[in-house]
Amino acid sequence: MIDVDDIRAFQTVAKLLSFSAAGRVLSVRKSAISRSIQRLELLLGVRLFERTTREVALTEAGRTLLIRFGDIVNRIDEVIDLAASLASHPRGRLRLTAGIGFGIEVLTELLPQFSLAFPDVDVFLDLTSRSVDLVAEQVDVAFRMGPMIDSSLVAIRLGEIGCLLCAAPAYVERCGWPKSLGELRTHDLLAIPHGNGLPRRWCMSDKDGVEHQFDATARLSANDPHAIHAMVLNGAGIAAPAKYLALPEIERGNLVRILPEWSVPAVDVSLVMPAGKERSPAARVFVDFVRRWAAGNARWFNV
Image (cartoon, one colour):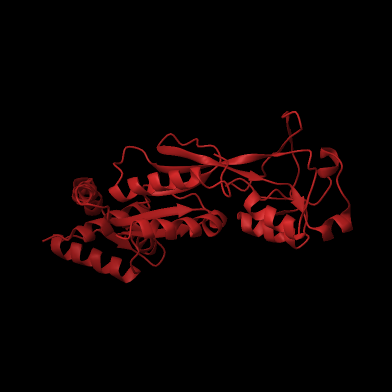
């Protein structure tokens, strides 16, 4: 008899073309993935993958069987989810992904509360700065920042996170206070680039709400807001970290506001899920829980 978990392992390796990556997605060891593939190959009597030290590729038989298996695992999972939804409370596994800084600062407060409310839901949180393929990596819910442009995803806006332009007192003492946007461009700026590595345009709004955009090369850049925030604290230059990071340090005197008459646009925060996929009971209660939590938590979100 074919084990559904072996089919799931086969489909995941086929999507990612990596035994190690499949193990991370399914939260099992690479050796367990290998054993699943070996059992399936032995039972079916065909070789599913060509494997070398550098790459994994589907055989012709593997490609044919991948098509034949189709969405059988998803359909079985839906039956299991339906059975769980008929129970008195949700149960099962929930796979989440988020940015590193947001995960450390915000989700480490949210998830313990969710776990207390739903003790039969097991949660795995993947914190990463890369753009995760929600379908290939079998992610139930992702937290995403900024505008949503991928039409293959369903997005639910939670609110926005404010940002503050600031610097360490030691930097201001060394380099002076910028008194205009023109002077700001001459200072040591720190920023998070686009996912492709290209610099972002700086955007500021004056006291009348009129938006001004300009290009400026960041002296230091990083793909994680915690790294930017830490470098600002250490006197590296001027940046616009999230309010929840900047305000406590401003109150302690470790940071000072720069050009306080200007404002930095807030960043939208959304819950994102694959379109066309029925949400599991665990995912549904998580989405509802997060929306209520965000609406009542001004420390993190402007709703």
